[in-house]
Length: 238
Ligand code: NAD
Image (cartoon, rainbow, N blue to C red; front, top):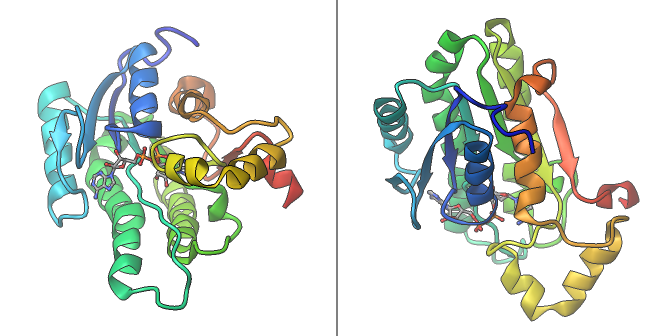
């Protein structure tokens, strides 16, 4: 922990009502940033379904009104569930894309003028190891997370000339309310992921938050367009 290394920074963190987003918001604040939090539920500054057409524009406006500016965005809100391809309904597939991809696009688009004006803006998206690989029952999720990684790379290319970096953190299996039901109901699933990681454990939300904080900091000023696995080494066995 580097107390104060984000002093002066003004960040939006979505999905901050739970899991990784909550840990990111706490970590950025502990490092000295002002943080404006959003979610569809929970104890956050801005409650909205971020798939609503104007929700991200309203979020950016509310954050700027509160903080006086904006230089960092970390869209963590996401959904996931196992659905086999056969019988996969259109509405759920679309919902996953809307939450995990379209809402991220809209937030970054709305934030862009402010990040450019700042001169050292930071965008840290949350992909997944399924941004690189696929998995059974995760066709919608994996499609959305591959797309987020591609989106992030193109944003990095477009905004780099304005001093803005865009990176994508790709968590492995992290013990959060998103994954807890599966880990609790299928102990073999937990054991599989613990064994797959050379570090021999599931990740914790703080493992991701610490890396996000680094990527938001001046220390990461020359890192952009990069997808970074934070998975205890699990993907070396893929
Ligand atoms: P989580 O369920 O604990 O948190 C996700 C948050 O997103 C929740 O608070 C939820 O209310 C919010 N959210 C969902 N839909 C929303 C909407 N329409 N509008 C606003 N907020 C909405 O899950 P988590 O594990 O902390 O996941 C955070 C991010 O990390 C997600 O993008 C997820 O895909 C990604 N991720 C998680 C894991 C893991 O193993 N837990 C692995 C890889 C990537």
